[in-house]
Picture: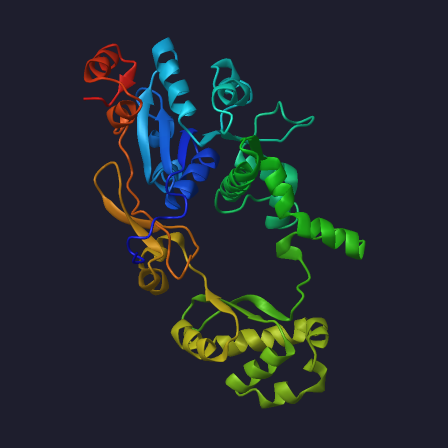
Length: 398
């Protein structure tokens, strides 16, 4: 079997998803990219995430690719019955609604596992079990609670990260739990409920700062005010008004840096021989480096640093990634057609398996686009489909 025709790793796994916004959909998006058949259950009229504007406008297309869509009225007993039948055929169910909402519908883990004991049921929540579990959480809420906003902004000005980092990472932890439960099912024959949560995800990410306090006895300062572990580890301005991050993170790279920029006197100065010495001398060293970089354009600096192996980065913007030569050459962006018909490219999973990027092409389903297809798989007749559509129990069967 050729690489092109080799099944994706999760081919044959059926996932039924009751999700909205980012965290829950991210779970399904990752599983779908890896080959699972992810069926997104939407309300009649569609997931409201489709209609978000502003900073939320990218949520739906980014985290709902490669899924099939079925639109059901879960307030109608017939629609709810169809959802239960669909879950009975699933390997995995994913949900991220408020605690208790799925149980009230009869779609909680206990009810579904009674009919499908092999089911792996993933709940994506704000908090795991404990005193906070009744609270409503958002990505930004838990960044503030868990210390990430404190560490990101300057002192006294907590700042959320510039992406839905907790939603997405929490979704990734959900996927890890699902895959672990499927592996355990191979041995036990039974599924289980797994959960991940925004708050605990945030705390895991700031764990390095907690460990720093435990090791040093001193609380970590916000990142903009931190004492860097390296002397040259900063953003510098170039001669043409651009910016570049450069990190000289070892004594070997310091020697390389001095050679590349012909800094013989600086390189020979015993006051700068070790990293610790350079950190203590940052106030005198950094102005010299800043002045040096202003003699070069951004393009010239990038070319020089590229040859040295010194870590560096232009200060990129998200919109610039559409044309990034590395992403284009490596296949890191997948084709997507937006609901308005616009063709674009969006990032695929940032992994390689057996030398190739696992991906399925990025199809974005219309509301209820696969309702008839999925219900036929459950054994419904054309007459039943027509009646359900006429009664507005199902959308998208025509």
